[in-house]
Length: 334
Image 1 (cartoon, rainbow, N blue to C red):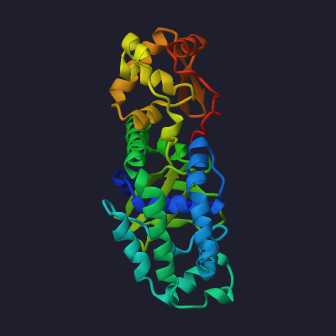
Image 2: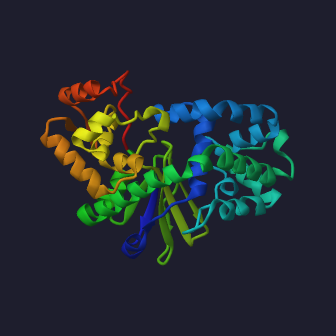
Image 3: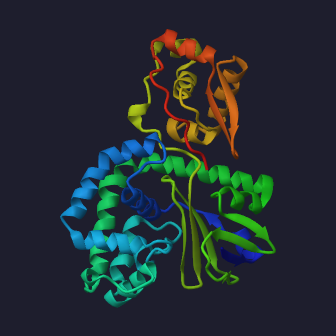
């Protein structure tokens, strides 16, 4: 298993940060797999997968580059540089473009664990990688970035609160099913059989949430390390949200009614904050009122607590004219 040796000072100074590039690369990985983990991902793929596949069909060299760059257990380093704090997409992708052809080919051999296909023995690989990543950002991520950013920020707030409540061990154990704090300054980052890596004192350790259900680790030299992990919130697409009936809004308040309507699908507090744009305190108050009224219930799913409408809540929403339609599958939680 992959182990990082992390000193206490490094862990205490670590930070949760937003990375538009990490979100873009995670979206590229989702496009490459082509199968969504929940309805929000499936809807996004339905909108963007045909265009992505058509682009690769017209550019077989880039298609080969993606397959090689994502590898089987190791991402080609030049293809996925580690973002800095506060760095925008353009700044990070500039480092992809700046990678030399020789380095790109060498990194691809590592990700493939063997020789390059003949089609990749060329000098324009960094430019092709940059063009594809820019396409994914501009066409499939940037149009949704403000909404995704709210989801990611809600996750970072929740994780930071967990640090103060249960310490870093509880947070590290919650990132993915295979990441866990072993003790004695050891952090298991994946299940691959790589030699332990010691993170030097003074190095920067960053935790970057992404909305797709994927994860990886990366580093730049010995100065900066990143753990990219799937956030707690699920992207509930706009067309999955039903309008709040005026009558229901007049009865219990528009904001509270909006929460009740959304809970036709089980959601966590973090997800509700992200999807509604309301503050954590406001969502919490709405949930308490709805719980006390018997209109919603809560259930634990792994480490998360999900809220959903009760039978009484369903009757109220149906009577107001919103309807329930077909219930979506329960969101997969981290």
